[in-house]
Image 1 (tube, one colour):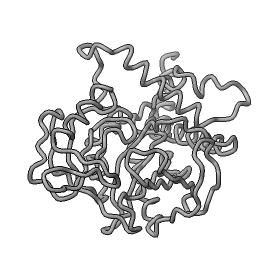
Image 2 (cartoon, helix red, strand yellow):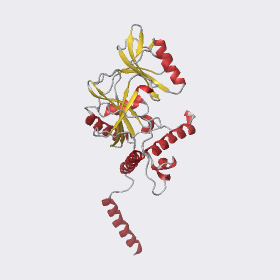
Image 3 (cartoon, one colour):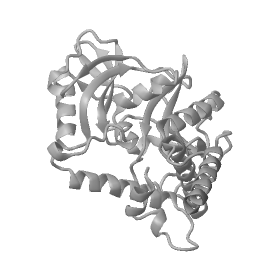
Image 4 (cartoon, one colour):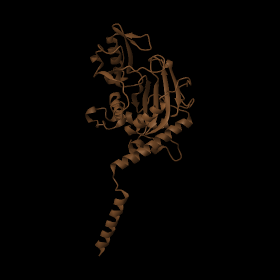
Length: 323
């Protein structure tokens, strides 16, 4: 993220002397930047090409998958894609699969489905939909602005804990550094009251009640493959070239599998003071290290040896000109 954009959005450049960094403040600045972008360029015919901005690209689930796949991590298979819900054809898909929107909020753009006769049960619930019902669901979410195309049918992943829906392993990564890991267990799809949370560090050690809004359940198991997940998240966050990125992974019966990227997590994202400052410091360090990397790639200034040679040449030339 360019330093000038970061400062305009009202974060690091306006904290004031002595103020400490805050994860929530930085995240709110990111959200304001996104909102301002939409406001300024509502007319898509004059919108700058933002395909090279990873914050925009990674929100798109299929584009995020492309970046992750390039790192060699295992991916869920994509069975079929559609531009709009009205074009969905679910015939011939596996007995279990997940329909997703490439863009969307929370779990609104996701339906895990199990075939039951000529219809589909929403996995972990008693809800049964026919194909027209699935189409109507995504069309409604699209109209509400909670799901954006394209839409795709993805492999249904099987976990190792016996739960019908896999636990989400959400790793908060700061350009190679890990802030915390959110273990999220869902009892019933689409039911916020059935969701349980636990926060651990990169070693799997419990962080306790660091969230202000999510009650902690210490019984959620830490994945056995957490060390591999952490290393994968480090690599993916560096590959993305942005200061902060949440990397969602799964522990499955075939190992670690990529879920999705989330550059701007939703919800309040409020943490107790010490943890908020810790995450904010990681964000600030990541931004500074990324600035150094970008400056090095631009190579605007000569290296030290070249600079010395230029200085000698300039000095010699100046003396010669005075003769």
